[in-house]
Amino acid sequence: MIFVGTDNLAERLASAPLRQYKAVLNEAGIVVFPVSSQHSAVKADGISYEDNYQGNALAAIFDGAKFEIRWHRDFSAARVKLIFSELLKHPQTATFKKHSLTYQGRTI
Image (cartoon, rainbow, N blue to C red; front, side, top):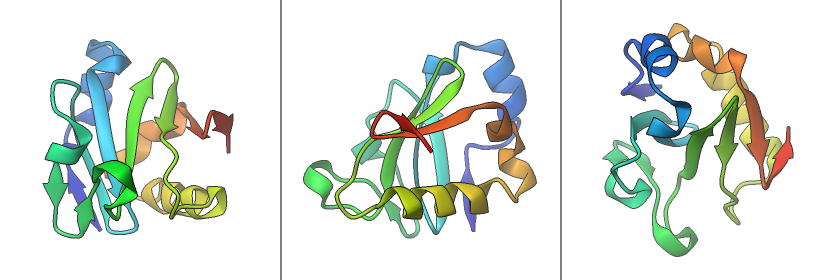
């Protein structure tokens, strides 16, 4: 699984407003980056968010105490929940356990 930008993530989230970070993710892993970048501009091997649902990854933003994932027509809520649960098994993303997960505006 790929983890990019997750080094010291807990410290960065504790010291900066959560709206300072975005992410793209799928079964291959997660890439965390500053809000100054667009989701479609950030890529990793096997992880590519593209406008109009053309990519194979989800777009997310840290919003307050939640991890908000934008709707993607190729990802069911069950699939998103599975991806997130797999991410939570790794120490690089342990800080996500403190945040609720929302998809399509609903907590899952």
